[in-house]
Image (cartoon, rainbow, N blue to C red):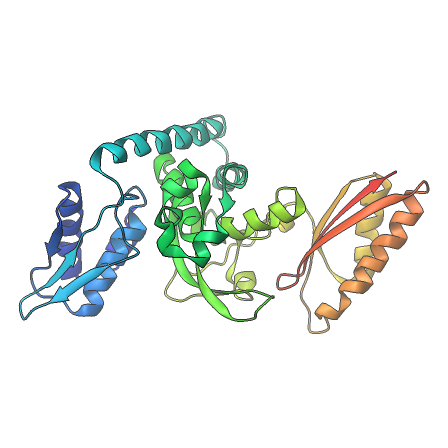
Amino acid sequence: MEYYYQKLPSAGKSFYRQLLSAIAARKASVRSFPLLSQDVFQATVKAVNYDHPELFYVDFQNQIFSQSLKCFTLQLSYLYPSAIVEVVKQKINAQANMVAKALSAHKAKPAYVQYRIIHNQLLQLIKYDFSALANPSSNIEAYTIAGALNSHHAVCEGIAKAFKYICDRVGLFCILVTGKSTFTQTGQPVDHAWNIVELDDGYAHIDVTWDINASAQSQHNRYDYFCIGDSDAKYDHIYHDVPLCNSTAYNYFASNNAIVTGFSNLESFLSTRMAAHKEILYFKLRRSNKLTKAIIPRITEMVEKMAERYYTDGYTLSAVFNEEQYIFFYRVVGL
């Protein structure tokens, strides 16, 4: 879907179509007529990039443009020769078709089920490309669906584009959004990309990138950022001018009764699962004015005491915390 096209003024929409035609003809440059402001010109190039993840062969990362009294001229650069584009496109589509096939048995189910299948497929397919993050010019492919669906290594932009690409193919609403994210390690905002989807109770964020990294840490599918609302996303994502995300029913923790309020409820939650010898303890604490990150050791201590009660022959314990979201992942394995 062309979400960003709809947000452009009429002159920008005209240049948007010019740019798509120039790319289809594999032209070396394209001129904007009539003259656009620089803001509209750049917004239009961004709109084509974000609305059309299938244009993986266009170098949107290194834009070169010039301005005259009459127009802007954008130099178009292509990452592959035409023959290679077709080969890579076939490989991308083969991978996308596998995901679509996994969806085919669930077309009658609610949208969130279909989004979750795509989310889970990408968790298994893609590894985050830290080398491309450190040196973008050495691996521009990582910023495209070719990196995500062909090479299976990508950064957040390539991952978000892959999610949108598959959603577009199967008729699910999805847009790519960009902003900033904050990491606990540095506390400094960094550029980031993720997706917004539409559910029957509103819009929601899906950040496949962060779930890929959390899943790799935990060796288990994670859903920390699956179908979350602004009320959660605002704690570690910075964004503006996107649809209001007020959906609350379909995030993992709400739909699995794994949002815990207070320590007495947490004790009951843990006891129920450990009594059933559930290996995975994956839950979210409801935020309150009294809740701080200093409680993490107390929660781990509670898990250890429960484990001693239910695993009398001994156990191993591993843990991964998402401190910004108050999400806890423990794996308890009896000996």
